[in-house]
Image 1 (cartoon, one colour):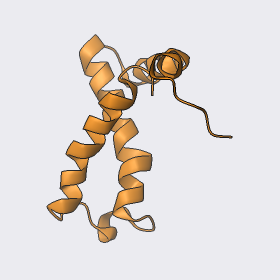
Image 2: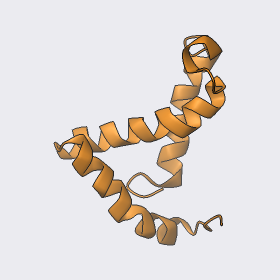
Image 3: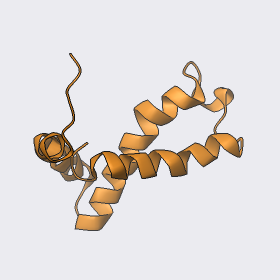
Length: 84
């Protein structure tokens, strides 16, 4: 969590979760991963990247750098412990 923080990522995840509930994101689309794992590992971060790119009017590579550069700040502000 950096740019949007854990709260922002929770909101993104909640909205994307409706794709599973509406059966728009199925195992046939996400295999070999489950829809839940695909959503958490791929869609949440990709959505964050694209929202940052749109928000700042920058390219996707630059948006990825914004996430990386803001990660330590996000961890500090949101008091998140890193997993080993």
